Image 1 (cartoon, rainbow, N blue to C red):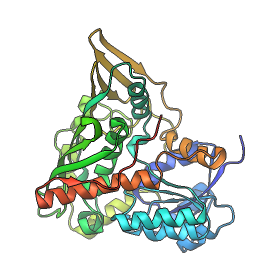
Image 2: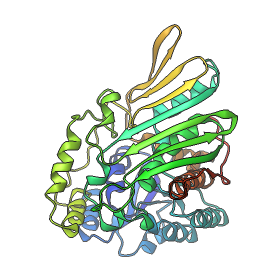
Image 3: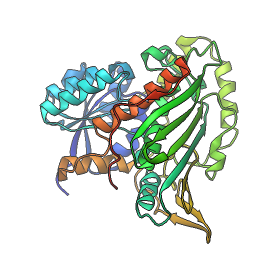
Image 4: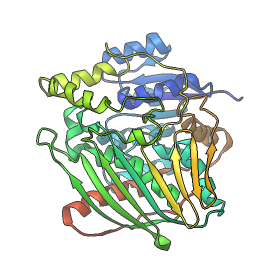
Length: 396
C-alpha cells in the first residue's frame, strides 16, 4: 500500500462522530489536523487521536500533511469551507447536503475544478454496499428494466437532540436537507436514468419543531421509471423492523427505541439544554461512548427499499439483496463489512491513488440537491417541478 491519505477535518460534531470508526480503522487514512469550536473536541482530538488541533479552519487547510479535507461543519457553512480548502489546493470530502442552494453547489464545483482537486460529497447511503450490489444486479439485465422503486423510512429524527438551526429550514434544518439527500441519492442510482420531475408534499406537524419533519414525493425519470419516497422523522413506529431489525448504522436495535426518544425529548428543559445534550454525546463530549472499531455484522442502510423490475422485485437488505422472481426468492449475500463505511474510503482512495473519477462528485450531488429543493418547492406551490440539472447515472 502506498502512503495513507492525510486527512484534515473541519467540524467534529455528529457527522464526524459517526465517521470516526471508519477514519481510525482503515489503514488508508491518517488523521492529521482538525478544527471545531468546542475546546473539548479539540483536546480529545489531540489526546485520543494524536492529531493537531487548529484554532481556525484555515490552519487545517494550510497544514502541509493534509491532502484531503473532510468538511463536517453545519450545512450553511459547507460552501465557505469547500472554497477555503480549494484555495489551498486540497481535495475535499464534504458531508451531505452538499449546500443549501444550487448557486453554492456550482461555486463549489467551479472552485475545485479551477484548483484541480477532487470534490466528493458523502457519506450518503448510496455508498452502501447493498445499494451498489443492487445496481450491479440491475445492470446485468437478467430481470429486465427497472419500472418502479419504493423507499420508505420512519425514524425519530426530529426528536433527537438538535441545535436551534437544525429546526430552521432556511439554515438547512429539517428532514429534507438532512434525510431526503440519502433517499434521493439511492433511488437516482438505482433508477439508472436521469430524473425529470418531482411532485411532493411535506409535513410540519409540531409547532415546537418548526421545520419539515416528513415528506412524500413522486420522482419521475426518463423511460417511464418512477420512485415513491416517504420519510417521517416524527416516528413512533420503526421501519427497521422490516429490514431484519437492523438499525441504520448496521446494528440490531429495539423496535421501541423511538418511543424512548420521544420520552427523553419531553424531559428537555429548553433549546439551550437540548443543544448541550447533542454536543455532549458527540466526540469530546461527556456522554461520548468512545470509538467503536468493531465492524458491525451488517451494512448500513436507509430503510426498506424495493426495486420493481420487469421480471423480479429486488429487496435491499443490510446483508445483501434478495431477488424475488417466478422461481422463488434468492439472497445475493455480501461478506460482512470489515470496516464500517469502508465504501467512502474506497471512493476517495481510488481518486487519490488511482486517478479514478469519483461517483459522488459535485455534478452528481448537485443533481441530488436539485431534487431536494424541488421537493420543498413542489410542496409549497402544489405542482410538479421540472428538473434541469440532472446527470446520467454512473456505470457500476
